[in-house]
Amino acid sequence: MDALLVLGVGNLLRADDGLGVWAVQALLEESWPAGITLLDAGTFTQDLVDPLLRAKRLLVLDAVKMGSPCGTIRRLTRADLLDESFGGLSLHDMGLLEALSVCERRAGHAPDLTILGMEPYDVTSWYMELSMPLQTRFNAYLTAARHCIAELTQSSDA
Image (tube, rainbow, N blue to C red; front, side, top):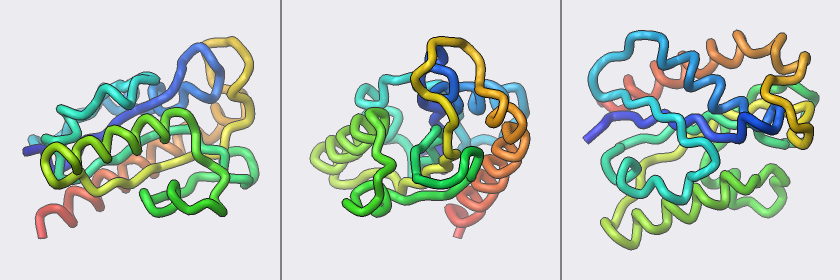
């Protein structure tokens, strides 16, 4: 069983919507210890039941509309996504929540979910790069992702 599965989700064709995929692709260039799996999930989060079943913890990298200033980075939980007052649920999140529910029905458990979201500037334009505001925050987002990975793998050792 993997200690941590890191999923980059999003659509590279839709500007900032591709944030999670760009991030996981950058992180895949780095060396990671055994037990940490990084995966470019694109927009198909509902098809990830098998990798999810093999993970203790799950970190999702994604652009999330949170009603915050563009470029704001925030850690979220499954409870945040299910909270009706939180307006940040995306189509990726709905597919992900469905996949986690399938894990629970199938195996009686699902990995603990953490989402590292960044407030997007543009998720509707058709171009294959991040908006300038997110490009300026991308390294900060990668640093935050590395910190999350370190924290989540340390807490899984306990």
